[in-house]
Image: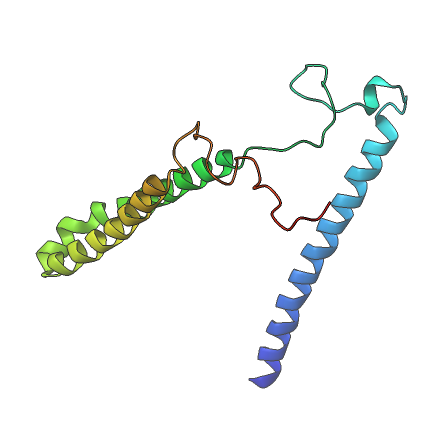
Length: 149
């Protein structure tokens, strides 16, 4: 019995090892074929940054408005909310039939309430406003009162 279990484990290990070796060979062969088949001509246009078919203007290093990220994160939060709520909504009727409907409703309501509080926080903080008015931190720095030249 012990010998057959060891043979089975060796077969499983051998299968996994063969899979890894074949994957590495596939990777190596495709990279080698790509290197052999692609043109190797270098020119100035090939070395420039590609930006949607347009000629790039200016340098690549510039200040980027972080509001893009904030709006994207808020979108992802609510997208994930829908992704997590939808499966529960599809089986909600079955849970009501089992007597677990109240618990499921409270759990989903708490989940949605937490996300709504997060949205209210972001809204009150003003991070959803695309054009923000100048604030004290964006104003001119205070005058030097130390008397230093």
